[in-house]
Image (cartoon, rainbow, N blue to C red; front, side, top):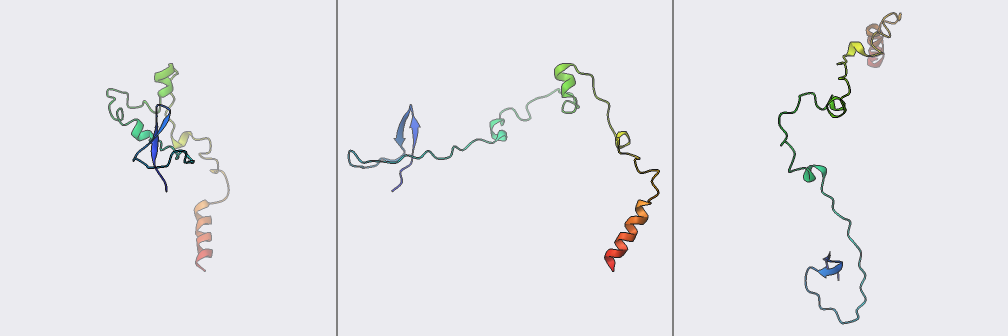
Length: 104
């Protein structure tokens, strides 16, 4: 038979009364502790802040530590952009050839 209980003030307290003979040996195995999710833990504060800058997530270092704001990057700023512009392979033509092979 399995009995359930909890620890209260360092003492194990059974949830329902159990009639066990005095001196009965028992085995106690702690159940896995159920942790609250971060969302449940933060439920009281989620959505409560107001008047924050729109770019707070992107620029948190600026607002927390005074770091200069970062330059907004676009795809054109990416170091890989244009890397293949002078390459002799026409990627669209290559894709068309590959797809034609797949259709065979």
